[in-house]
Structure formats: C-alpha cells, structure tokens
Length: 334
Image (cartoon, helix red, strand yellow):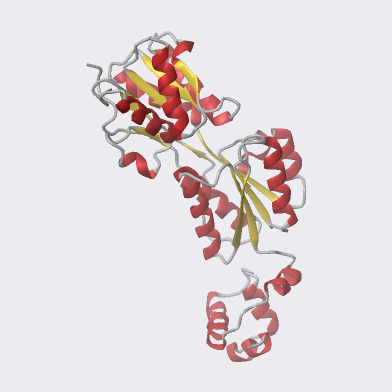
C-alpha cells in the first residue's frame, strides 16, 4: 500500500503540502492540488480518515437533521446538501427528528457525538432558546426553513406567509369565494405562517374566514384525504380547497375523486411545495414553489465557506420568495 511519503515524492512536493491537499486547505494552488491528486490516484493512495481527523481537528463530516426520511420534500433537501458537500470532499451524517422535541434533541446529540464539524438542521419542535444555546457550543449551526433573529445570517428559509397568501389569492382571482383549507400541524411555524397568509388573502377580498372550513392536518397524504372527508361532513359548500403541502393535496384529490367529485370542474385544488409528483398528478397540481433545494444549497455552501474556509464565490440568499405555479387543478367555479 502506498504511503504519504511516496505521494510526496511522486508529486514533487513536501509532506506538508500533501497534508494540506488532503485536508482541503485553500492555501494550495489548483496546479499543485492537481499534481498531488494525480499522484494519489496513480499510486492508489487512500488517506486514513482517522489520521486526517486527528491532524486537522476536523472529521470532514456534517450532520444533517431532517423531520422525516421519506417524501419528495426532504429527499430533495438531503440530496442537494449531500451533493454539494460530497463534491467538496465532505461526508454527510443524516438523522431524523420526527417533529418531536425529545427526538430532535436526541438526534442532535447523536450528531455531536459523531464529532460533526457543523450541523444543518431542519428542526421544528425544539425551541429557539435551545437552538441559540446550541449555537454557542463548539460547532457551527445552520437552520433550514426556520428563522431566528439572532442567527439570521445562517438561516435559509422561505416566506411561508406570502406563500399561503399566494395560494388562496390564486383561487380568489379565479372567482372562488367558498374556500376550504387543510393546514399542517399548527405547532409548526411554517404551517402557522401559511395559514396566516390564507387568512390575509381572505381579508383583502372581504371574504369571512370560516373556522368550520379549516382542518388541521399533518403534512401527509393520508391526512389530506381524511381532511377532505372531515370538510364534507360539515355540510358547507366549498368550490376550492387549499392544502398546506402537495402531499395533503394529493390525498384530498384522491378522496374527492373516490366520492365522484370531478377535479377541477367541481373542486379546484391548490397545494404547496411544488414537489416532483405535483406535475404528474391528474389534473396537474397548481401549487406554490417552495425552493427547498435552494435552501439546502445555501446552507451547504455556508458551511463550506465558514467552517472549511473554502472561499469559492457564492452569493448567500437567506430569504427565498415563493411563487405560484399555475397548472390544471385550479379553474373558475362552475
């Protein structure tokens, strides 16, 4: 097996330079880095990750907390973060918090125990105070889909209130006034803000908010279906249904169709997130673009710049503005 000394000799550089290349040090020219990497490849040299970690005081791993491991939304986020960091020679350790305070804390401690150099967190249940205290520890913390004022420069999030507003306003602009709403769990900040946007759009149109046409769901397909059935049991007519994410919209559409309701002729539906399957539903789902991939990309590049000191030019955008994606599931009421 080749040694670092052989790599040094083959590349014509010092041992210190080889070490800097292995540890991602920016004080190495591209030409020198290429020479070292070529020598390593030709010799089949595999650096010892434990030795690298001890020498650099870095594990070259980043912890990623998500709420769930299933679904297009979190899949897009995880793949984006992993792709950016892998290309920079870093590894991602992924764990789930399941939107539960204690499970999120346990997951974060798990990542800390693995000596992750930074944490990228999609945390929904732990308090702002907990996250602020965590940020004072000897690890950099970055937040996705959440904003805390004292950590604003390391928060990557969308304007959920505006997104909720745009979803309902789109239905109103089509002529709907009897509008039902299935929210996400209202202990979650993004779900709460989307509902506030829905209410703002109703107020602007002088449409009274009817609490009987609000169902609190759980961001899953089954809860969208159940939410639709609960709304029909109220026996109040509605021609448009706004769902706080695309999974619930998909479930609601299936439940409505199973009851013989034609979409969009008898019921218009609007979702939120614009996940991949939204454009393949029938009819194609009108929804709100929620750029989770851009948030993940921003968080990963922030880590590379501030933790690993890789000064590649990258413009950090912290607040992302949602936009309406108009497709076939929203039409004027019959």
